[in-house]
Length: 97
Length: 241
Figure 1: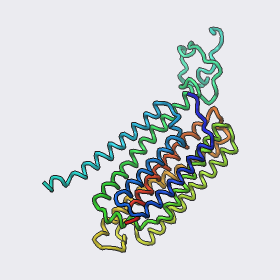
Figure 2: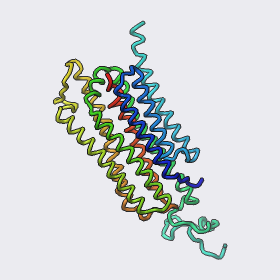
Figure 3: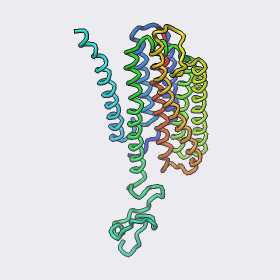
């Protein structure tokens, strides 16, 4: 697969969106949204990192095996986070019953 | 084919050039930058990128342990972590995020300059990337200085102005703060060193061979992504409370 060369315009566009999202997440942090503050902040972070991975890191245009490697890495991270959090979040259940 | 001496199968001084290898059919013109184990430039580039990603996945797991520790202790000692988070500088954290994203743009443009064979644009963008990385570290250093003056460094001299029962766990917040941002700052230092090295070899980069630019770019963007998560988790999510 020959290397795909993106137009610099794409990079500048992604950069502008990333800075706007930073501005958005910084402003929303000052508003009381209850539990939604965390959800909004992390959703914006996921969206920003997806833009960086897909365009700046060219994963959108990479080989299938590279894309698979990235996805598998994320799956392992989700296992690390979800299983550990599940453990800690359910430890008090025995004490309550 | 048979009466011609084998060319480009291996350098003449390679220790393991055997008679068997010499009998192999010889590929036509082979660019100098393609190492002997690869068929062509493209295969070499794809292998390098895949290898870099495998390394970055191990880095994700490395930082992932710290993130999971942060999330667990934040849920266990919620009030102390809110107090800790609110003693960080909102303005400085936001400025650092903006600077780091700009440095990712200049890094992406460096890769573009290498892909299209523009050595002076490559050097210029690498230089800006390094400068912005240094600006990030200067702001981080000023923040560290501020915390040190306020004794917000875990240990026997740790001080916290607030409810006394929170002191221990605010200290735990600062253990994680220093470890996570410190590890990130070390990665930034390594990144700046790598970009500095790229500047010295920039003139050797061509549209056919620029794997070092591409892969150091991947590393730089990865370090940016870590900060994209550190910024909301440490500075933002408890700011409104």
